[in-house]
Image (cartoon, rainbow, N blue to C red; front, side):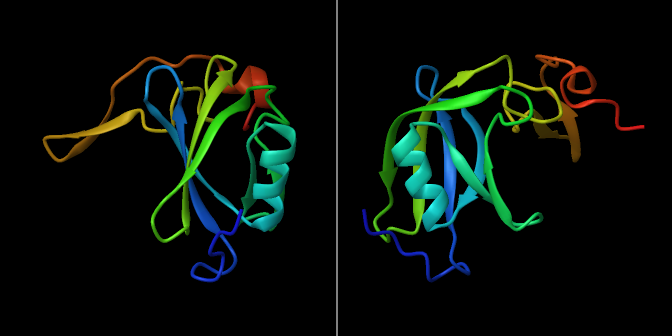
Length: 126
């Protein structure tokens, strides 16, 4: 299970992909501990760079990511994690995927409807 955590301050990039549809749901980062917890538990765990701590995806929302497979790239410094998303959406803004905006005519355009109300899940931001 050797990965190269040395290139990005102890982290590897983890691309999270829906196992059935192939859609990219999000991108996160894992340190060695987050990677090992992901493997041990079968649920995606990340390292939050802003909070400087581990976080289990879905610990607040309940929208967990059940791991189906994990692959690494040729340099062993990035992961492709195929998952089953347990919940209506992965994005904290209420969308199925964090990639819900597309560049059209030089503007970012939301290309899908929200899958859930983030205020109801996380509380009002006001």
